[in-house]
Image 1 (tube, rainbow, N blue to C red):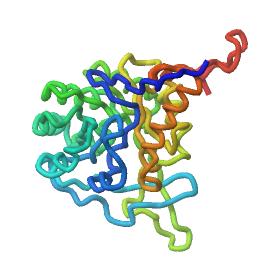
Image 2: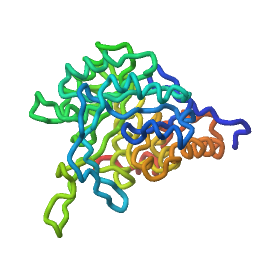
Image 3: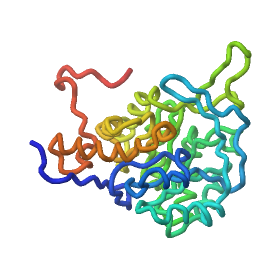
Image 4: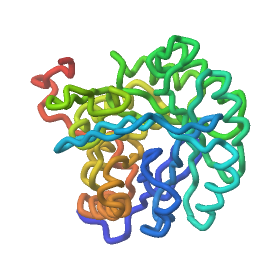
Length: 317
């Protein structure tokens, strides 16, 4: 049956209601994007990750390209929280979409302090980028240690009344452990996930291709891995899961939602085709109409079994 009315694309992420499930991943758009696409058509606008201090980022080269993936090592260059409040937020003031700040810090204490400092009515939620190194744990990423993950989220939740979202790293053995910890610590939503650690070498120069030697792999090649993790996390927690990893079109977004995501973040594709996000919004609406769905939220977790229960294979590899 095909619906005769426009589908309701709104989704609920914790205490927020978004007009649709599509938003950018942090660090993949800047203020200038408001001159390219109608940012108000997005479900939310996730801003570039900031740190408490000013940072230049890693030494170049910062990008190594592959056919279906890109290896980045940017190092979170940051202009700090005052620039966010005084310049970045005003730049998006005309956009009719909630603004999501993204933060990173060297210690759990600083995560909390930064969340408190930028708590502002113009910010609808704060994303904790816990894929960065913890200087008090020999540089091991917060998101690779369950207790460090818990401490970061708990400190942020205690420091602000603004909803906190946790952006998990895929560079762990069992991501559901971290999903449950973040939920228990008070996160209203999970972003699954960030880039996958990788490395590139130039055989002719006999040198690494990135100035930082290692970087994060993103793009279509990583989608099956992140899709699997979204599916696992969505079954492990009750809070919404936002899928992120290799989304290049509306069909990719719907695949994530069928696997259990309530919403999606578009990353690397924004560098290649800036209209990817708005086109994905249109495609999701068309998909709902074509499948007789009255609301986009009906897609979430609607994945059907490929086989009858008696013959269905287990999901373990």
